[in-house]
Image 1 (cartoon, rainbow, N blue to C red):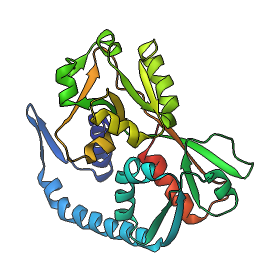
Image 2: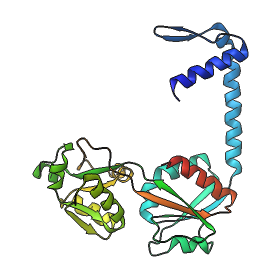
Image 3: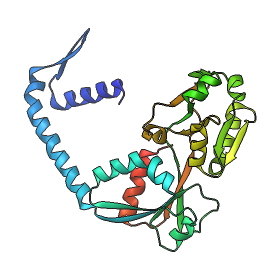
Image 4: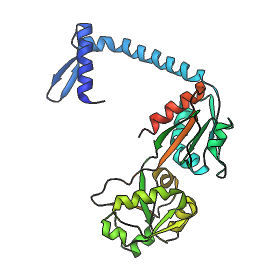
Length: 264
């Protein structure tokens, strides 16, 4: 919340109570005696409000079946999953991670409650879709490759263009975005899967771009992340979430939390 908003809200509260709550000075502000007298009441009110939130959150219970691939479930949604389960402990999230399945069809046939993918076709009239962005992405390679090819923590576009790049087929859209990002074609090797691409980079065959959630989860000090001088962060991967236009209460809750966490 912006400081100006806090100041405005405090002023509104002071006007409503008819007392001054803070004495301001050059080093900040100190609570008045009136504010100190009100503090125990306000603290008690917030504790009751917290209990109300806990009561409302625990009233939600049941199971949601999420259709997506293992990579998205295990890495891109790991932080969201942990936060959601902590907030709604009685809701179980089950991930159907068969990469050969058409999850839109599964959703239309009510075999999953929500589908999260980069969809290749548009859904039927009863299905609603919204876009969600992955968390940040980083260029990375191994320390050995970095030393051999003089990869620095910051690289110019020209220096990066001289390096071999590894990309997996599912992120064809990422490759297109990166080429738009650099304004020219990349010297890229395209492989079938993300884990194959990651493995090739770790074998010293080039540089890659991966989700920070995944790189953070790797217990290794052999990864070097770098950025491009005078360029913003790499573009995020856009996935889509599909669900029925007349969703259940649990799906409505899940979608609301998903939108909040992955807001574009």
